[in-house]
Image (cartoon, rainbow, N blue to C red; front, side):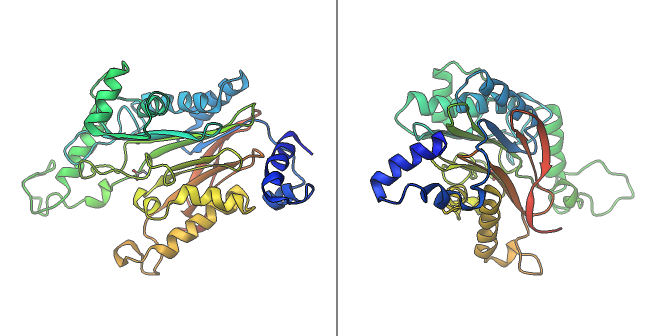
Length: 351
Ligand code: GLY
């Protein structure tokens, strides 16, 4: 019996009286032959630099939360990634508003910020909310004041590239309004290329298991591009865009946050793993639940399936990992201590 199985058995058998030999199989029936992977980091497909950094720190003995936050800080700092932090796509008024959450498995604590302006590393602010307050979530002006209090530097997060994308979106919103994209004297229907400037839900999620077999996670985002100011997605909501149970595993998500908010999806993935599903199976089941619960016709395609995508990332206590999307095209990055690679996510339906 491994160290994890032994600890699990001792604590659980006291509670339930379940036979010693049976317990690990109840928890992980599909994977009983596999070896426990000591350390592993998984992220969304835009997180290859994050998984590399987090694993490097974990192998030097870092706590998983310190490691994954340092990992996603790289992506938040990157002006070329328009889904998070510096250079994130702004709200409808051209102001970047960031959301993030962290969850620390061994202490079962969490911290989060929402609608945070001017601070490029909301994941780090979320971690300080967890560490230095008795609260879980701070929003807007309160979150910004808290970040200032803890010495975070304010800066303009709207890069030239993001500003140009926002202007293009605004100018193509309607042919009836007064904002006009570049045009000639012969053009009609000026501003009709809305399909070229579709809104996006870019985000980074990163989960890690450290050498002490503790699991933690982080999700950080600029949210839905060109959103209504004040709109908050799933990323800073514990149970929706991120959840960790240190005895079972962790899960996080990217994609349409509203779908995760009404389905509590990340905690659902962890609960499916608790029932014995593999991380990939758990992610697929959560995708299926979202599809089943998508009742509004405006959110369905002609076949009645969701017309949006959501991707899940999950990691269990054994260090097994998986990812799945509603629609094909999703990807994830993983570092198992040997290689750092990007792979395709499983999916319910092919586009
Ligand atoms: N999943 C990111 C968002 O919807 O804001």
